[in-house]
Each structure stands twice: as structure tokens, then as C-alpha cells.
Image (cartoon, rainbow, N blue to C red; front, side, top):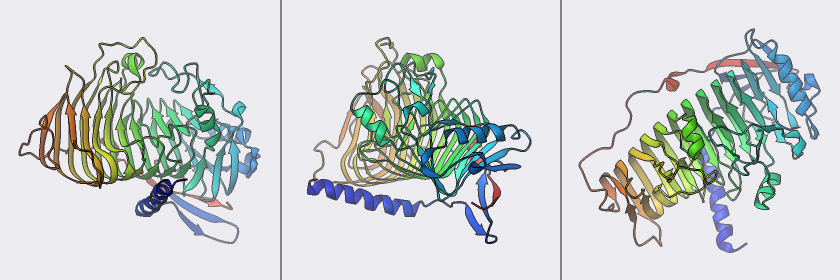
Length: 474
């Protein structure tokens, strides 16, 4: 490895440690009650009346024995009592190898701090699932896709949490297949929840996902918080959190190191997303940190054909990351990205601070509508500090369909030792700026203005978690 590459890896590692300490979650409390038992308290949407441990159903935590059937049996068993006050399954200390398994309603999956759920590398333990209707085909291959490691559909009141327990997708097996162009179906995700409401994913460490880490889709009333997500920065498509055609979502207090976008907001792909017509809206992202040298801190798109609106982003830190909040779209996507509010970002060692792309390719097939032009408007950035930046902005709209109503205010960008000669490269965009350095392009003239930030609160911001507890010998 060249010295410069070693230096970059070392700097990324130091940055990761620093940000992890900065955002270390307030994990569940462990309290010893006696020699044989302990009590763990944690925060959840709802507490549960019934409780079981994976070992009650034949689970073996040796890291070698498959526990897929144990997970299936345990969840099937507790689902029978879940309507009576809810049920929870505890994954205790150990290494629990498993393929994909499905969750149930009124249910909590609790991963102990010394437990590791390991994704199986036996492809037979990953059943196929239907293609997503808003995508029309798989993202890796057109013919199909595999179920996620932890999967749920048509659920109400489901919690995936722990006291910082670990879920390890063992993704290197899948990354190699993908790089060698041997995937005939789409790789599994780590966690996918579909057509559900009242969802909580929190207080976990996720590592080495085969592809996307957390993918709520066609769902509402979602809280994602206190996650630590790690994947090698060169791993393919290991997005951190991807809310997709979701309403009323709160993402907060999390830290992601990724080979792709740390957060990617989505809503369907070209003609399939346009037909399905389910936007992502009412989304708040706050107190969040990212490292992703080749991708965005937060991406809006590129799959945004159901629309993206009412997005609030604040108190975000990124180090050694390609861009801040990026908009990705193109002809054929249709729909819109509108009413986006961003404030209080601290960025260090960035290729771009602002990046908008109107010619993003990647279509599901040749049938996309070449007259489906996306509408990008009402994009607001304010109160941003950035250091060691190569280029302040690359803003490319679509000819005859410019991105409009862009507002950027109170931004101070310090350049890298070898910056780009043109700091603001703009085409087919319209808007205003104020108190921005370096000087923006002529398409964004100065106006005495403070860019707005949404003043109302989203319903999900007022959802309070309850203090729950479990007791036993874990």
C-alpha cells in the first residue's frame, strides 16, 4: 500500500474513533441484581408483557451452528402471545449464525451487548422475495432479490434494539460475488421493514452489510436512533440508512462509516416509481455523523420517482466525505424534490460542499419516459462551516428544466491546499445566496436573506419512548 493510502486509512480510522466518542449512544442500562440474574433497562415504543430467550428454542451461540430455525421457531411462538400485551425475544451473549428471518407485530427483538448476530454465507438460507413494485427489478440484477437478514412486512409496533449489541452481515462474501459480476439476484440488505407502521430501530452496531444496512420502505411512523454502522469505505452499495417511500420518519444520534451514501433518501425508480407514486415526506435527520470518502453524507435520490418533500436536516458532521447533502436525479425520474431544509453542518476534508446532479444515469430498463423531468425546488441551506474543501459547489440542473428556488446563506468554506480553479460550477440552476464564501456563481446572486428552516414540528418528533426492562441470566 502506498504511503498516501496508508495515511488516508489512518486518518479515516482516527476520524471514526473521534466521531464515535462524540456520538456514543446512550445505550440501555445494565444493572446487576444478583449472581444469577440481571436487569436491563432500555427505551422503546412499547414495553412487552411476554419474554423469551433464543436459547429456549434450541439456539446455539457458537458462531458456527445455524440458528435460522431457532429464530423462526422463537418468533412464531411469541407471535401467538404478542396480541396480549406484546412479546420480546432476547438474543443473549454469544455468536448467533443465521440466515434471513421474519419479525412479527407488537414485538421487540433485543440484542444483548455481548451478542453478535452473524449473517450466514450459505445462500440457501436467504429465500427470494418479491421485487419491489416501485423499482420494477432488482438493483443488482433484474431477475429477483433475496430477503434481508432481518425482515418484516405488514407489521404494526415492531422494535429492533439492544444495549449496543452487534449485527454482522459478513458482507465480504457478497461483495466479492458482486464485484466478480456473479450476482444473478439482488444481494440481501441487513434490515428491511415493508408496509409497516410504528417502527423503531435503535441502539445497535451494524457491521459489514451485504448491501444497504437499514431499509424501511412503504412505511410510516419510524424512529431510527443510536445506530453505529461500519463498512469498509470501498465496499459496494453499503448505504447506512435508506428511508424509501416513507412518511413521518426520525433519524438521529447515529454514526455511519460507509462505502456509499451514509443516508440515501429514496422513493422508487423511473416509470415504476412514478406509477407506484409513494413519496418520502416528513423526514427529520439530526445529530448525525458520517465518513464516506466516495459518496454523500446525505443523498436525496437518485431513485426519487415517487417524490421527496419536507426534509429537515440539522446538526450534522462529516469528515473525509465526498459531499454534504447531495441531490441526484435525471431525465426519466420524474416527480420532485422540494421543501428541503438544511442547517448547522460541520464538514472537514470534502470534495464538494454542495452537489446537485441532473444527469444521473442508472435506469431499470430502456422503457423509462424521456419526457419525465424531475422538479427540484425549494432547497435551503444555512449555517455551514467547511474546511479542507476541494470544490465549493458543483450544481448541474437540467436544460430547460432548471433547479429553482435554491437558497444558501451563512456559509464559510476554507479550501484545500490544492483546490479546483473554478469553485462554483453552475448550470441550469436558479436561486439566491447571502454571506457565502468563496463567492458563489452568477446564477445564485447575492440577496439580503436568511434561508428559511421549517418552524413546525413533525408528528414523529413528539413521540416519546417508554422505559422498559428485561430480567434474567443473559
